[in-house]
Amino acid sequence: MGTLEQVLRFIGAILVASLAAGPLMWFAMVLMNIPTVPGVGWEILSVAIQTIPLGALFAFLPNLIGATVMTGLGALFRPARSPFAWIGAGALGGLLVAAIFNAAALDDKSMFVAMILTGMACAAICRAFTRWPEEAGHAQA
Image 1 (tube, one colour):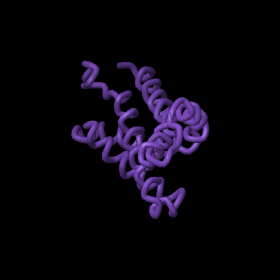
Image 2: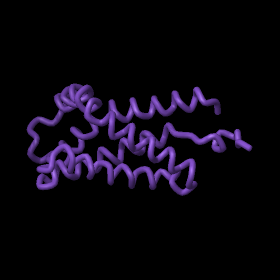
Image 3: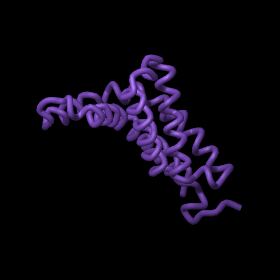
Image 4: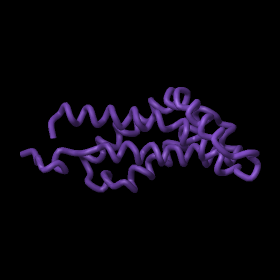
Protein backbone atom coordinates (compact mmCIF):
# COMPACT_ATOMS: atom_id res chain seq x y z
CA MET A 1 0.00 0.00 0.00
CA GLY A 2 1.44 3.33 -1.02
CA THR A 3 1.87 6.29 1.24
CA LEU A 4 -0.68 8.29 -0.74
CA GLU A 5 -3.29 5.57 -0.26
CA GLN A 6 -2.57 5.49 3.48
CA VAL A 7 -2.96 9.26 3.73
CA LEU A 8 -6.21 9.20 1.75
CA ARG A 9 -7.58 6.37 3.89
CA PHE A 10 -6.66 8.29 7.05
CA ILE A 11 -8.28 11.51 5.85
CA GLY A 12 -11.33 9.56 4.65
CA ALA A 13 -11.72 7.88 8.03
CA ILE A 14 -11.62 11.18 9.89
CA LEU A 15 -14.10 12.82 7.51
CA VAL A 16 -16.58 9.93 7.50
CA ALA A 17 -16.46 9.54 11.28
CA SER A 18 -16.80 13.29 11.81
CA LEU A 19 -19.75 13.58 9.43
CA ALA A 20 -21.43 10.63 11.13
CA ALA A 21 -20.93 11.96 14.66
CA GLY A 22 -23.88 14.37 14.74
CA PRO A 23 -26.48 11.88 13.52
CA LEU A 24 -24.98 9.13 15.70
CA MET A 25 -25.22 11.30 18.79
CA TRP A 26 -28.73 12.41 17.92
CA PHE A 27 -29.96 8.87 17.21
CA ALA A 28 -28.44 7.64 20.47
CA MET A 29 -30.33 10.37 22.34
CA VAL A 30 -33.56 9.52 20.52
CA LEU A 31 -33.24 5.79 21.13
CA MET A 32 -32.70 6.32 24.84
CA ASN A 33 -35.77 8.56 25.03
CA ILE A 34 -37.98 6.86 22.42
CA PRO A 35 -41.01 6.47 24.72
CA THR A 36 -41.10 10.26 25.20
CA VAL A 37 -40.65 11.17 21.51
CA PRO A 38 -44.05 11.82 19.92
CA GLY A 39 -44.65 10.88 16.29
CA VAL A 40 -41.44 9.01 15.61
CA GLY A 41 -41.10 8.92 11.83
CA TRP A 42 -39.46 10.72 8.93
CA GLU A 43 -39.01 13.82 11.08
CA ILE A 44 -36.27 11.96 12.94
CA LEU A 45 -34.31 11.42 9.74
CA SER A 46 -34.76 15.05 8.75
CA VAL A 47 -33.43 16.32 12.08
CA ALA A 48 -30.58 13.79 12.00
CA ILE A 49 -29.45 15.12 8.63
CA GLN A 50 -29.49 18.64 10.02
CA THR A 51 -27.08 17.58 12.79
CA ILE A 52 -24.30 16.66 10.32
CA PRO A 53 -22.52 20.05 10.07
CA LEU A 54 -22.46 20.81 13.79
CA GLY A 55 -21.60 17.25 14.73
CA ALA A 56 -18.74 17.22 12.22
CA LEU A 57 -17.43 20.49 13.61
CA PHE A 58 -17.27 19.17 17.16
CA ALA A 59 -16.12 15.65 16.25
CA PHE A 60 -13.32 16.46 13.81
CA LEU A 61 -10.58 17.18 16.35
CA PRO A 62 -11.37 14.27 18.71
CA ASN A 63 -11.53 11.92 15.69
CA LEU A 64 -8.24 13.26 14.34
CA ILE A 65 -6.49 12.88 17.68
CA GLY A 66 -7.96 9.45 18.41
CA ALA A 67 -7.23 8.03 14.96
CA THR A 68 -3.69 9.42 15.01
CA VAL A 69 -2.95 7.95 18.44
CA MET A 70 -4.51 4.57 17.66
CA THR A 71 -2.81 4.32 14.25
CA GLY A 72 0.54 5.05 15.91
CA LEU A 73 -0.13 2.53 18.68
CA GLY A 74 -1.16 -0.02 16.06
CA ALA A 75 2.17 0.49 14.29
CA LEU A 76 4.00 -0.18 17.55
CA PHE A 77 1.80 -2.85 19.15
CA ARG A 78 -0.15 -5.35 17.10
CA PRO A 79 -2.91 -5.77 19.76
CA ALA A 80 -3.73 -2.05 19.39
CA ARG A 81 -4.97 -2.82 15.86
CA SER A 82 -7.90 -4.78 17.23
CA PRO A 83 -11.29 -3.22 16.55
CA PHE A 84 -12.08 -3.86 20.21
CA ALA A 85 -9.08 -1.76 21.26
CA TRP A 86 -10.24 1.05 18.98
CA ILE A 87 -13.84 0.85 20.25
CA GLY A 88 -12.59 0.89 23.84
CA ALA A 89 -10.46 3.94 23.08
CA GLY A 90 -13.50 5.55 21.46
CA ALA A 91 -15.51 4.96 24.63
CA LEU A 92 -12.78 6.65 26.68
CA GLY A 93 -12.64 9.46 24.14
CA GLY A 94 -16.40 9.96 24.35
CA LEU A 95 -16.14 10.14 28.12
CA LEU A 96 -13.31 12.66 27.85
CA VAL A 97 -15.23 14.80 25.35
CA ALA A 98 -18.29 14.75 27.62
CA ALA A 99 -16.14 15.93 30.51
CA ILE A 100 -14.34 18.65 28.52
CA PHE A 101 -17.19 20.14 26.51
CA ASN A 102 -20.02 19.71 28.93
CA ALA A 103 -19.33 18.79 32.50
CA ALA A 104 -23.09 18.76 33.06
CA ALA A 105 -23.27 15.85 30.59
CA LEU A 106 -21.88 13.67 33.37
CA ASP A 107 -25.06 14.39 35.35
CA ASP A 108 -27.35 13.85 32.35
CA LYS A 109 -27.28 10.08 31.92
CA SER A 110 -28.64 10.05 28.37
CA MET A 111 -26.08 12.64 27.19
CA PHE A 112 -23.30 10.76 28.96
CA VAL A 113 -24.25 7.45 27.30
CA ALA A 114 -24.78 9.10 23.91
CA MET A 115 -21.28 10.64 24.02
CA ILE A 116 -19.74 7.26 24.82
CA LEU A 117 -21.72 5.46 22.11
CA THR A 118 -20.82 8.14 19.56
CA GLY A 119 -17.13 7.86 20.49
CA MET A 120 -17.30 4.09 20.08
CA ALA A 121 -19.01 4.33 16.69
CA CYS A 122 -16.59 6.97 15.41
CA ALA A 123 -13.64 4.84 16.52
CA ALA A 124 -15.09 1.81 14.75
CA ILE A 125 -15.51 3.85 11.56
CA CYS A 126 -11.92 5.10 11.76
CA ARG A 127 -10.62 1.57 12.36
CA ALA A 128 -12.54 0.25 9.36
CA PHE A 129 -10.57 2.61 7.12
CA THR A 130 -7.16 2.03 8.73
CA ARG A 131 -4.53 -0.29 7.27
CA TRP A 132 -0.91 -0.86 8.13
CA PRO A 133 1.65 -1.70 5.43
CA GLU A 134 2.06 -5.36 6.38
CA GLU A 135 -1.71 -5.89 6.31
CA ALA A 136 -1.75 -5.01 2.62
CA GLY A 137 0.83 -7.69 1.81
CA HIS A 138 3.67 -5.17 1.48
CA ALA A 139 5.81 -5.98 4.47
CA GLN A 140 8.56 -3.46 4.91
CA ALA A 141 12.09 -4.73 5.37
